[in-house]
Image (cartoon, rainbow, N blue to C red):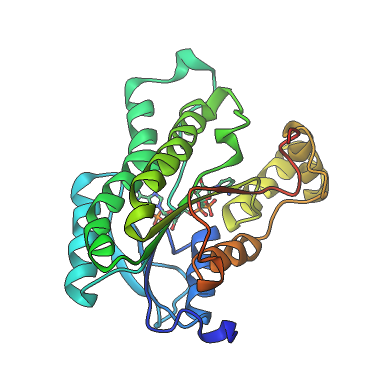
Length: 260
Ligand SMILES: NC(=O)c1ccc[n+]([C@@H]2O[C@H](COP(=O)([O-])OP(=O)(O)OC[C@H]3O[C@@H](n4cnc5c(N)ncnc54)[C@H](OP(=O)(O)O)[C@@H]3O)[C@@H](O)[C@H]2O)c1
């Protein structure tokens, strides 16, 4: 099969596609021949005129509605939806430090944004008996790290569960639904964070990386994932080569989760 053109004629949306894993996924789908739309609050720093950018705050119902309307009026359909957006901005300090607003904003971005986008795009996928939806969760949905990421881990656990239920409902109607749960990814934000840890501890970036890996309980493969490695998995899952895959979860973590 010609992998270079295997998504030719397909229309794909990658949420949070301006940075990190989302950007790598968007570029991987472009390489495979898809028409790719990306949505985020701010325009991408790295310009790529082939990516159709829609500015939107997807943690708000109006933001998801705007993206659904613009995509369907510009292209008439969506074949591939990669719900990649996810973030955790809540403070450290345990459960008492977390307000209702912290919980609500985390649930909006990590759980309700995918739910609303799926609801907006599914009817035309079901009508055409064709479509793939990917939910990017996290190993924190299986292996919670408490403290500041408590709401994020709970939201990602909810996303995994919802993804499976949705697959049960729409797989018989021709739409595949899958979950991808990455471990630590070496994104631009992660690189900046490591550099800051190293600066504050007067250590090297390599030492800071070892410290983070230890806090995760170790990464057997010895390093975080590159965004392109996550993108390669997604590129396969949305392709015709994965035509029988639905309702399953793919953990990409270099062996971090210690259980089978
Ligand atoms: N990085 C990791 O180690 C790691 C590990 C496990 C799972 N994950 C998951 O992998 C996915 C990608 O993570 P990442 O680290 O690659 O992300 P990232 O580098 O932090 O990029 C986040 C993207 O989402 C956009 N975004 C954030 N809030 C938004 C909002 N309210 N509305 C619209 N767009 C918004 C950002 O652009 P704007 O800020 O301009 O909106 C950006 O494009 C997420 O689901 C994350 O939970 C990441």
